[in-house]
Amino acid sequence: MLPELASALCPAILYAGRSGRRVAAKPVAIDGEQGRIVLQMTVSGAVGADNGGHMLVALDEVDLMLQPDADAQARAGEPEPAYTVLEEEVLRLQRELKSSVGESASSTEALRASNEELQSMNEELRSATEELETSKEELQSVNEELTTVNFELKNKVEETARINDDLSNLITSMNIATVFVDRQMHINGFTPLSALIFNILPGDKGRPLGDITHRLDHGGSLTDDLMHVLVTLQPLERKWRLSMDVGISCASRPIARTRTASTARCSTSST
Image (cartoon, rainbow, N blue to C red; front, side):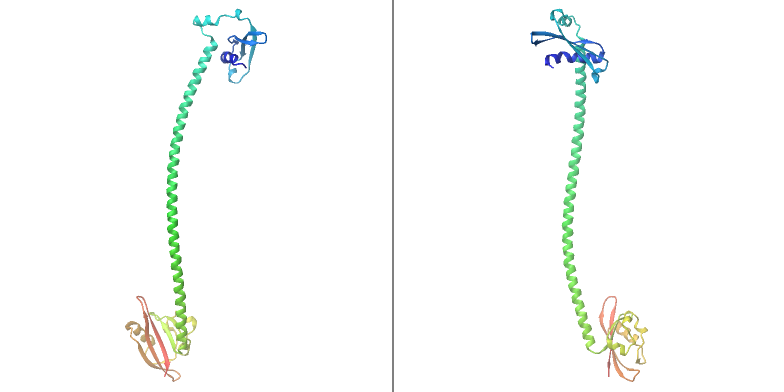
């Protein structure tokens, strides 16, 4: 459609859609094949047709001399209804535009506030991430220290096990019957030759020495002698006799003392 036709037709369409009447647009002169012609556009439609209904637009070629003088109507103070509707439409669009601008400003403020909150959350997350990184480094350092300590403890345990094996082999090679007890007179260990004097078995470790029978023939008490050694920390030696009339020397000596317990050794040798 030609621009000059659209500018005259739009107000007529608006007015016809609102009033439901047949509306004649302002005549428009255009250049035709036979020279300059004048078109009269008429719009017909039902009420509310401007909101999606159908309208009929008729274009007729007319003689400009036969048309009423629109400028005379304007000078008489009677504006054309179509232009009144157009002005109302412009005002409505202006109000809608103003409302849209206000809503856009409110949305902008809300978005700005949301952006600030997101930035604050981002800073908190960055701070938390840095703290986690620091904690991770500290944990790695502690883990390395624990690994080093564990390795050292493992070496000490292996060394202690070797020393215990050496001591056990040494005590066994001395061919002396030896029984180790703690302060509660519980058996901690013994050498194989102890089975010749005490009726002791490998499963008797931890049992009270007084529960184990022996073949010593003496007037005193072996557990009393051992308790005396643990209290005084002084060695004690007695000569006893086995039931087979074999004389032996029994020596009780403290070999270690801690805050909670002491260990005594009762060793015998034949005389």
